[in-house]
Length: 318
Ligand SMILES: [Zn+2]
Image (cartoon, rainbow, N blue to C red; front, top):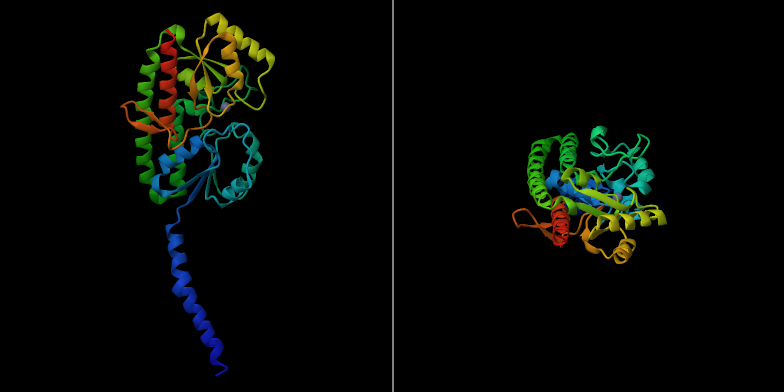
């Protein structure tokens, strides 16, 4: 009797594990998708558009968050360590979490930046080669398509069984970006030459200006870490008065206070809020080229919102 009791207990436990917990656990494991943790909202959106249903995406940064000054939370560290694939921007955009990202890299996970992999000659740099590269390259439709292509290739290495799906998602993404690009060029191209100046809080729109042929002027440089000095402010006020610039644009991820004061001082108006370093939310929409509603949490929605806001404000001022 005594000999059989432990055996029965073991059998009982085995039944519990296999009968209740076991299969449930196995199902969960089979259903779980690989976890892609992306630093910025732009990259999270790109991962979702290219990865589709094959991956789970977690974004460290949320709408309205400034990546230049973003610091990792305890939850971010947990997310990064449980990630199967870490997607980051680089080029000093996420300046404050560089060390955290380095530590994750040492764990040997998939660790990738499509932006860093772009040919350097296509990127915008300051006056000399020691100046930092401008990281705001998602504003160039051409470069963002290239980033999408590089990501689809990397995802194919990561999950080779889904290669065809990633390639087809990329083609769909490329087509929608090109559509928005052609429409945007026609929209901005319709503005008179004299009103094609985009004045913003920080210098995030140089790729946008280069692509859509619009002059860009900003209160601050390409980074928001240091506040604008008195000289920056005076220079901008002088520029606005000299060129009779009628509209200034605040940014969703930058404090609008300084720009609003300058608008008051110069008699200019605030032409609207642009998405600069963060995309919008799932519940905020912009009208796309065909009048369709695009969530501003996507690159396409963000660009449609910015292009329409800029065109409306600068057209009105004629
Ligand atoms: Zn920026």
